[in-house]
Image (cartoon, rainbow, N blue to C red; front, side):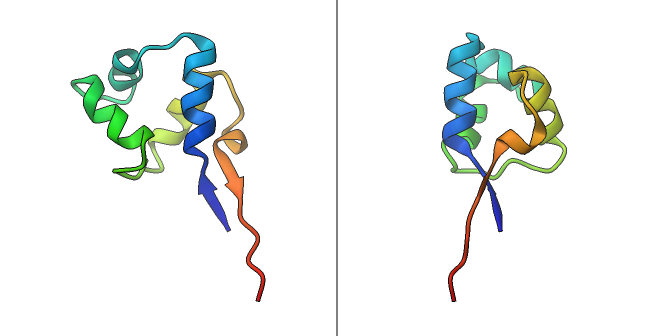
Length: 72
C-alpha cells in the first residue's frame, strides 16, 4: 500500500526554496494556509495535485509516496 509522503513534500519544498504561497498558487489555491493544511495532512492531496507537486518539487512522481508493508 502506498501513502503520500507528507514529510518528503515539506522537506523538498524547503530544500528548493519554494514558499507556501507559491505552492498554493501552483495547485490553484488562493492562499498559503489552504496549501499548508494539505501538507500537514489535514486535507488529502487529490490525484490531479500529484503531477503538479512532482513538477514543482523537481522530483519523480514515485518520490511523493512512501511504501507501507502490511504484515498479516
